[in-house]
Each structure stands twice: as C-alpha cells, then as structure tokens.
Length: 374
Image (cartoon, rainbow, N blue to C red; front, top):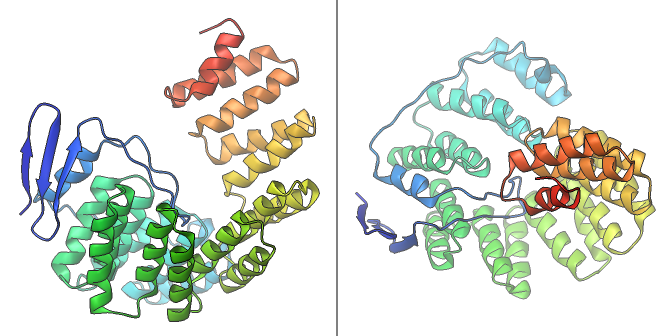
C-alpha cells in the first residue's frame, strides 16, 4: 500500500512499485500529449493521489441505450449496434463500439460502452484500462486511477495499465517515472506501439526533437496503423515548416478517417505559413467531418477576424459556445466580435459569462476593465 506523509504545505507519497514523490499543496498540472485528449489543468494533485490510498471499489454499470440516434448516425456505429442488439451480452462488441464513439468524440457514450464491457466480462484488464484512460483524458484523475488500479488487480502485468500510469507521470512532468512504467510495459510486450509513442512524447516534452521523431518512427514500425505516431511526426515536421508534414498528416487521416485531427493540423500548417485561404478550406473540411471539433471553429474565427469579417467570425465563435458551452475562450471571442460589431450589451454579457466560467482567465477581466466595468 502507498504510504502518505504530510506536513502543513507538502506531502510525500511512497508507492511500492514507484519512487517517492513530493508535492506542494499548491501544485497544479496540465498535459498536452497531442492525443485525443484535451488540456488538463487546475486539478489539485491530492485528489488523484488519494485514490491510490483508497480501498473503495465502486462499479456501477450503465444500461446500454441502443435506441440513441447517435448509434445510427454513422455506418460503422449502425453496423456494430445491430450486432449488439443481436448479441446484447457480448462484451467485445460494446468495447469496439466504445472505440468508435471515442474516435468520433462522443466521450460520454464511449465511456458507458467501456463500462458495460467491463461489467459483462470482468476478466479483461484492457476494458478497465480503457475506462481509466478515458477518464484521465477528460480530467477525472481520481476516477482514472481507480479504474487503472482495477486493471492492475485483474492482471498485474497488464502493459496497458502500466502505460496509463506512465501517462500520469508524464502529466506530472516526472519523466523518470514515465520511462520506468513504459519500460515495465515493454518488458512484457516489446512490440506495443503505444510504449514507443509515449517515449516520443517524453522526448518531445524535453525538446529533444531527434529522439522524439525516432521513437514515433519506432511506434509506426511496430504498428503501421498507429495514426497518433504519424500525426506527431507530421506536427514535428510542420513545426520545421517542412512540406513533408502534409504527407504524414494525409497518411494519418487515411489510416483513421474518424479522427479529423490530421485535417485540422493541415489547416494549422497553412495558417502558420500565411496561406489563409488554404487554411480555411482545411478547417471547413474538419468541421464537415466532425462538427464537434471545437478548435476548428476557433481557428476559422480567428482568420475571419483578421480579415475584418466580424459577422462571419461571430458565427464561428457562436457555434463554438454551443459545441462547447463551458469553454470560457469561446464566449470571450464571441464577445470580442460583438464589441467590434458595436454591440456593447452583448459583448458585456459574453465577457461576464467567460469570466464566470474561468475566473483565472485574464482576457475577459481585461475586457471588462476596458469597458469600465468589473
């Protein structure tokens, strides 16, 4: 069991299989792994750590609602949903549908399917790991660790569970701990592409581009269909302003057409080069294929704002507030458009909503001060 030592401002946790970690109570953390995962920020670390100490093991199984219209919105989803209706106790089918839903960014539905799979077949550690991974990427660190613990209890040598722990260490910028967990996973399975991918993410975080690219290439060699590694290669070449980036991004999209990240990244490539017309075309493609990809609305809105097309820019940010109603930046940017359109009342409402959603976000506070309000 982990041991917790603490004083007024610091606490230390010693794990049986990890090193001792020291945290200050005010530590906050964030992660941007370039995966389908979003920025994690402002979550007190103690919430995640205490779950390691907890022995509670709640397991509520959601009831699958196969009548949800989302399940017929995509041919792949409809096909596997029909199979589930025919075999409603087949855990593997729920797990596979969860993977498709995750790719399409229906996270809450994917999570339900993963949990259903884990309840139907309690011997599959990978089902528990999948739940933990999704909770982690959606900022529920304490819930994530609980499910990872379940996976490890089912199979202490489960490489996927160790890779989830590696992600946690990567989040903490504890690169030594990250490498340690990756190496445990690779000892059990030296051909698991995700292990090399996470090594690449560590090197990328360490600004060692050459080692990062080498690791991503190794991940691709182990699994030629591992699109996340190909995307990262595309992003690194894009950062060098190398046109070969487009080839990698195209390849990644062809390997997984449910993931529009490569299309968005193509748009960013053109945007950085000042080729705004091409960038807008890519962002439009991204939105057409996945209307929930909120960052595409942001980038499109920004370009339109730079072109003084404030009405069109407003429409992009307005959609963003509907796609992501808790996104403070979406309301701020919509407010900025309203201000430029000489609609101070609407601008004030947006700035206030933005500030309400994220009081640490400085831009709406500055805007309110600029307008003589608080």
